Image 1 (tube, helix red, strand yellow):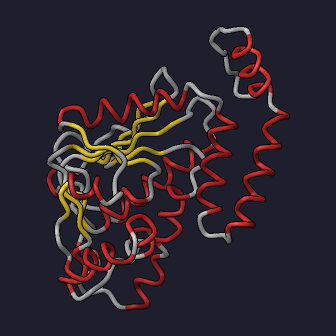
Image 2 (cartoon, rainbow, N blue to C red):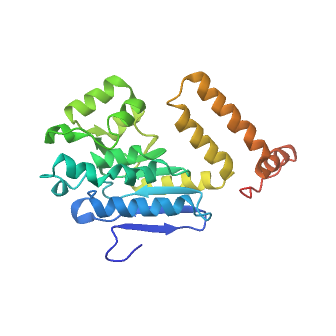
Image 3 (cartoon, helix red, strand yellow):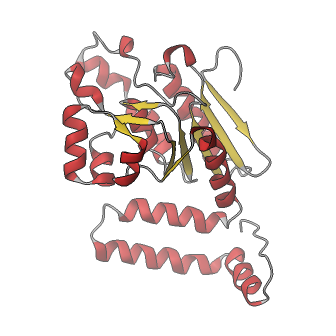
Length: 260
C-alpha cells in the first residue's frame, strides 16, 4: 500500500494492530475519491484479516484530514453527487467489526471530523482542532456530521458546532465528550497504538460483541438494547476464551486467548 500511486498506507504490526495512514500531505490529507476508495478497500480487507484485532487510523504527525477535496464537488450537480454513492465507501469503516482508533494530530475538519467520528475511540493531540465548517460553503455535513455529532455531544453543542462551523480545540472537545483522550502531540500516535495493542491482546470475540452491541443498541429502545446485550453475553459462554479467562482468574495466572 506504500506505492507512489497510493494515498493510503497500511502496515500490519506483530501485535495484531493495523496502522492505516492517509498520505496526501501536500493538501493536508484532503479526502478525494481515491482516498475514500482506498480506505474502503483497506477496511474491507482488514475486517476479514485474522492477523488483525485492532486498527489505528491516522493522518500522521502533522495533520489528520483537512476536509473533503472541494475541487471534486465545487460544480457538481445533485445527480452527480447521488451517483457517487460515497455512503458505501464510508460504510466500510463504520461497519468494520474490529475496534478502530483515530489518532488525530492537527486539524480534523469537515469530512476529516466525520472520518474521526466513524471510529470507536479518538485520541487527539493537545493542538488538534475539530470542526464541521460546511455551512460556510453553503452546505451541511453529509457523511454523518450532524447525526454522529449530536449523538456524541448532545443537541446544544452539536447545533453550535454545525451551525457556526467553529473550531473546537482538543481540550474543549474532551470536555464535551467529542473525543476519548487528549495527550501531548508527540504522544498521539504512540498512545493510540498502545490502546490498540491493549485491545488486540483481549479476546477478539468478546471485543467484537461489545462493539456490535454498543453501536446497535444505541439506536434501540432500552428494553430492546438490553435484550440484545443479554443474548450477546450468553453467546460468549460458548467461546473457549471465556472458559480460559475464567480459569486463569481462578488460578491466578495470565490468560492466553486463542480467539476461539
